[in-house]
Image (cartoon, rainbow, N blue to C red; front, side, top):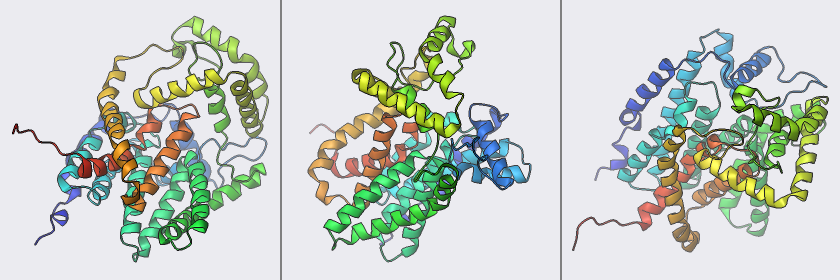
Length: 421
């Protein structure tokens, strides 16, 4: 009997998406100055010149080196910026392919194709194709991690899957520093569980994967220690995000606000004046400090805000969930009709995730270890993101793992009969 799972070539059946994404990159060319684009390009130039951050006191560790490393060939060869955004489209297309490859290990071929198509149409990621941001690269890494995690435990004798999986998790932490904290938490948890369950080979295999990931991140952490004298220092932007997330002021919902505020961006001049009134003293002190000390100051103020206004912090966390899912609410900003486009996709994801809670809980012991690992990985990340100022893109990058769980649950628990008996 022919194995139908081997008959489908995902690179071919999802090829129209590659054409669509390339078209998006060509229609909306970037000039490299939008948002953080210039920052990533600058960091890639730094690496080409033999350093990453300027020396103290001008240390700049706001972003991990994972994505700037990818940009090095484009900078070194003086390629046009549009070549980077075309790469974004290629990476998004490849994420569909590897998501499908992961899905078909836990669900039927038909369902795997449907959910992979859903991911290919996931409009929240389209806005990041024509800009030099990490999101397209990150979702590519996430889908690779999902595929190689499942393969590492399904085919334990194929050691290459374990090595690749460990490398990918480590490189993800270098790309998005929040995953460095996720990696550290899971490593500690698996180490404890491994000690308590010495005969469980899954814990040993998982521990080996995570140790490889830590080895991948070690050069960057050692470099950061040489600059900051701080162990496991992943980046200097955490304090700023935490500061805005802890905002106790009425009308502010925990989202990051550019300061000093440009009136055109705040839309209303009165909003600009209010933001300056609320935050001017804090930022006047912060701007006089080196970036590392500024990070420490923001964290200290944030902790004080949370202690003094715990209820407001919880409200901000709830607002953060709304921004991650539906791009709402934002402080001092008028909402746009485009926000409505996010409702159908993320609404469906949340609906099926809620549906999945009961069967996953009841059948927890029957679920494959690799899927449990991915679930903890995803929800540790989401939990950490809720505590810091977050946007829709923070949810977008973890969607592939959530889709795998939705597929797994639907394939085993949901039976639909459209015929009337």
